[in-house]
Length: 253
Image (tube, rainbow, N blue to C red):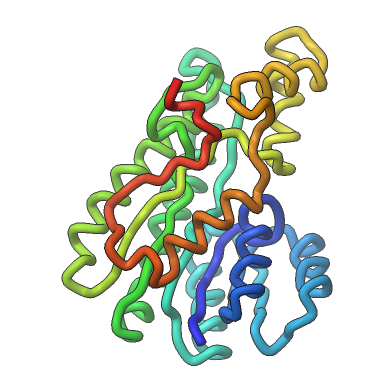
């Protein structure tokens, strides 16, 4: 039985991924700062033998180390990691405060890098495996009022390529999932600010956003989780160093 460690696993894409891997028979260790949502997810899935939650903040490397160690201690091995935790803020280069820029970099870049620093050694010890990074469609395209988010997600796209080269000889595949707009709590909260910037209601902003997609609606977390599972599993054994869009055709034009 394989084991995956997931950051930001309490809500949104992370929670959908926890559900997917549990449904597919994997062991799952996950970490988040949102303990209320995490405990609700643990209660919902009701499989204590295959699911472990550790409270922690990815901006604190010791929290990540503890969560990874807890996962390996419970399940005996680690085969994959989904570096999913991240934040989004509405900003441009003209109005972003130094504190907010630091927060974005510490969470989205350092949080991911430190997650990988802690997770890669046990994956190597297990004989290899897979890494999945949540890099966003903003690896491919720019979007308004997303200066720092696009900058940090672009960095994760490059990290994906570099790590794939470095870790290939160690039998570790590295890929990024690049989602378009997905209906998650993070995006719901963000769109309140975006609606203010565009002088419209949140409902009107969602209607405009949904209209960008060929099917007429943004994505769901479960749709991204399917790609995450594919990239973590042996089904993607010849895939590494790549960026996989789950964006409803937005980048295609």
